[in-house]
Image (cartoon, rainbow, N blue to C red):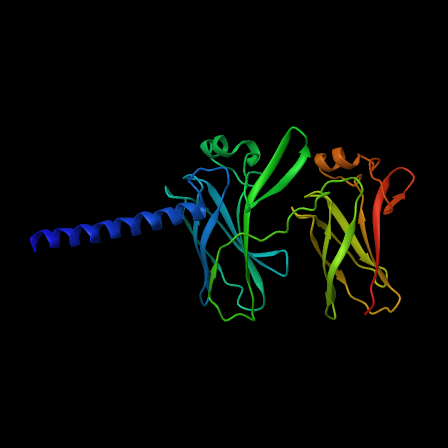
Length: 295
């Protein structure tokens, strides 16, 4: 009987050990090993009556500076803060609540607008050039010899949702097109919605990440200018006006102050562009997609 009790106790301790090891493994797997160049964020954003609290997790090294923003009306920063990660990569933020309407919380780890400690720069490279992973985006690349990257996560806060706690997860992107970065450029509009003020456009292309493209609606005088996402997709908001015969024009002009990578790929004046979207402007070439729209 005494031996049986020992066996039972041993089995219980073994089970507990397996559970502990398993949970540790899951935590490390979800965020990655601390200090990895493949940066990950986790945790949650909590909405309270007058404030927003971020209980953040990451695999960043200690003393990495992360910035938090509450953004309304697409680009207006209502509230912001800056914090350092602790010895486990965690951080806590507190910001003003927007109270009404939709908003988003943005958390970023960058080197272009933020002064990072020397040990952080040594870990992730000058300008964050060694950063990798689903949370990482190009931040600036005007010099072929120097690239700046940032790790960013956005958490949307919708008036249509009753949830007050929101999980921090990476944005889901499409696979890059097989001809991503090809000089035979294509541009498509995948979805268009509108209200009385704007057209809301979701589009796709094989244009490289960070390239600036512009869009306009021939039936209105407004336009929008955005950067292409890492998978070639883009979103635009163009002022709305009803017009039965109007169409959209999406333009890509490599000569308009683009990053060095864009000028190198497509030519400083667009001289490497080919295909049926290319138009000669005299001193430069651009790609223009004319897309009919039937309301």
